[in-house]
Amino acid sequence: MAGNETNNYPLSCVDCAVVNCGKRNGTYPDFCLTTPLTEDEIGELEKLYHNRTNNKIAVAAAEVEGGFYGKYTRVEETMEFARRIGAKKLGIATCIGLIEESRILARIFRAHGFQVYGVSCKVGSMNKVDVGVDECYTTETGPVMCNPILQAKLLAKAKVDLNIVVGLCCGHDTLFYKYAKGPVTTLIVKDRVLGHNPVQAIYQARAYYRRLLVEGK
Image 1 (tube, rainbow, N blue to C red):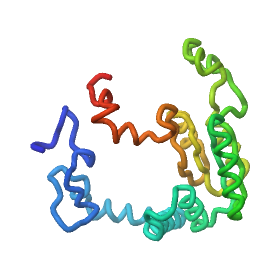
Image 2 (image 1 turned 45 degrees about the vertical axis):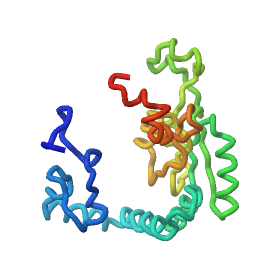
Image 3 (image 1 turned 180 degrees about the horizontal axis):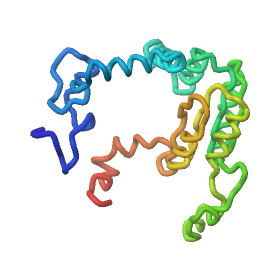
């Protein structure tokens, strides 16, 4: 791609067809985000990865990826990751619409020796209109708002070692991540249309979901 900008935005990793950063055996494009890094910036990053907590998480993640690549489901990877960071008490931040899935997940975790503490999104029920939501947005989904901030606070109070997000709504998960204490991983991403499999819209972006590529829609 010519130049360093497209549609008035600077080029970045999503515009790269080389992906040499994953191989490091070729050349980088002229807009690569890796090549401008200075020795000082790299040094600061290395310090962060040598931080005790960060290092434990980074090493465990790399070991799970390298040791069980294409072998473990995400549920199994989550348990293996938890073991490797020493997490014994797992906190589930669940959508109430996936409470049955979370019950099964809790059974799985407990069968493998973990303690489990789960908090539903509708905990401490609040009315949507009380926080400024127009009533027109309550017709189909009801008046009760999700409460991800309280979910995060209750899991922190329970002193869980690892927070696990199960199907929180887009945006509500943002607030949960903001207020969660300790490490967080996501197990299920909410997508009511595609059975919680949002990547399907990307796979079908040139077929059934080509409307997504039409500007302005």
